[in-house]
Picture 1 (cartoon, helix red, strand yellow):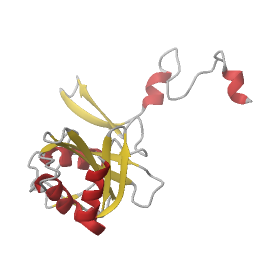
Picture 2: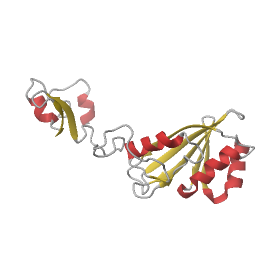
Picture 3: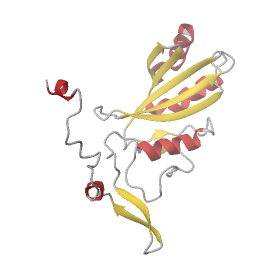
Picture 4: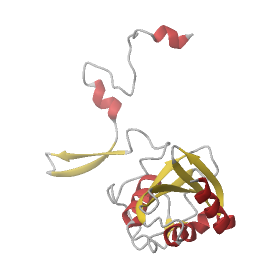
Length: 196
């Protein structure tokens, strides 16, 4: 695996900014603009042959300048080896789509766009895939409110689905217990340790 990593770095040069071996897998950090060249090399090179596309996903690190990682997972059945390729992104600068290299990346890039707001340039149909068309925000961002912005419910009087602003605290106050978003008014065993 070490030799494979050295071969990849030597072949791709400045396109690779980092290399890590952990838990039996190889992780490559690549330049965002070079992602298409990197995955094409990993697929086509005789020493790599990462011909099986597994997935694309995102990760959110709000304190960083480029807050998102777009993470690609590939498999080489010939080497019985996996590789992870990461690029840093933000919500304004698009990441080049790899759908021209791996057509199966289509829905995974749409999912990453939908849940994190990462844009992919050159994607054939970049639109939401898991949330509703009028959905506000991107639910896997760490700054997305746990309750969301709107609730969707069926209104019996109007006989249709309605969208309304979330009002959880008011709804729970009509019951005899507190909302889980307001916390408890009683002391739980071990609470005294948290105050010290």
